[in-house]
Image (cartoon, rainbow, N blue to C red; front, side):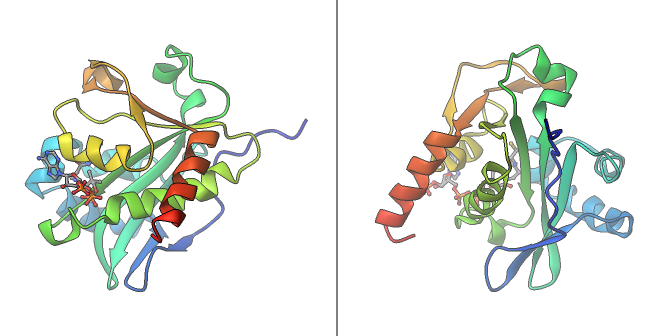
Length: 190
Ligand SMILES: CC(C)(COP(=O)(O)OP(=O)(O)OC[C@H]1O[C@@H](n2cnc3c(N)ncnc32)[C@H](O)[C@@H]1OP(=O)(O)O)[C@@H](O)C(=O)NCCC(=O)NCCS
């Protein structure tokens, strides 16, 4: 059997004319530090830049800087949840990919960009042999994030203890549910 390779091979991904994802590099430390000073990011994603830099060489994680008109405006990552001890205790099916996203700057939020990025990323993740589910784990009070992910078809369970003791609601989206979302978006012409 061919072993599962959880890392996306793409070093850059086009989201729109002005927005691109570019594989995170060590030189991006200051850009990440600046993104983390945004109060809305700091509130919902309280980590420091070292946490981001440390995943660059992890084989289970694909981290991207989000660029808007060539300027860093956010971060998104996909990771192999089955490889993370925390998720193993949640009995996630093989192969499950986890997602995290943060957009800095009010101009970059509430305009549909988050779901647009996740949709394009998930097309690639579900295109990988063996991926059956994507998960995402916002804080139960992060109503904007939950709403944004529900628009993609994620379904959320009750609040529970999350990664490293944080609070979370677990959102799941199967391959079939994602296909349904794509059909529905296509029918709406988006
Ligand atoms: C969460 C995030 C990725 C969502 O991406 P986005 O591009 O802003 O999302 P969208 O614009 O598609 O959708 C946001 C939705 O939430 C709604 N919304 C905004 N503020 C809200 C609030 N306080 N309560 C409820 N809904 C809210 C918007 O109206 C919109 O819904 P609609 O399209 O039905 O009108 C982005 O806002 C972000 O990075 N926020 C800061 C960091 C963060 O919270 N990261 C997530 C950690 S899990």
